[in-house]
Image 1 (cartoon, rainbow, N blue to C red):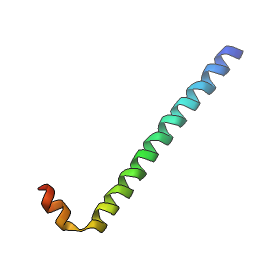
Image 2 (cartoon, one colour):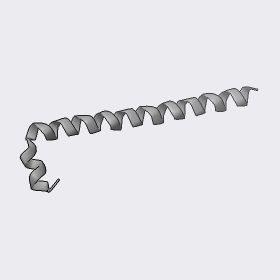
Image 3 (spheres, helix red, strand yellow):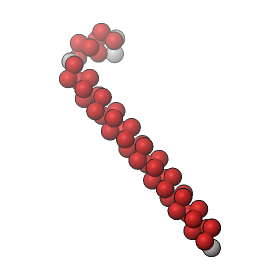
Image 4 (cartoon, helix red, strand yellow):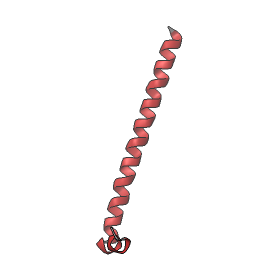
Length: 49
């Protein structure tokens, strides 16, 4: 029983960690996108986007 409880908490930690990483990457993407917008549309035109 103790081992099952331990593996359960490890699994919870891993899923929490991956969720945190996903959220961090998502927020980073938003921050980068908004900073690109601050540079102006001209930058996107130069890139051909």
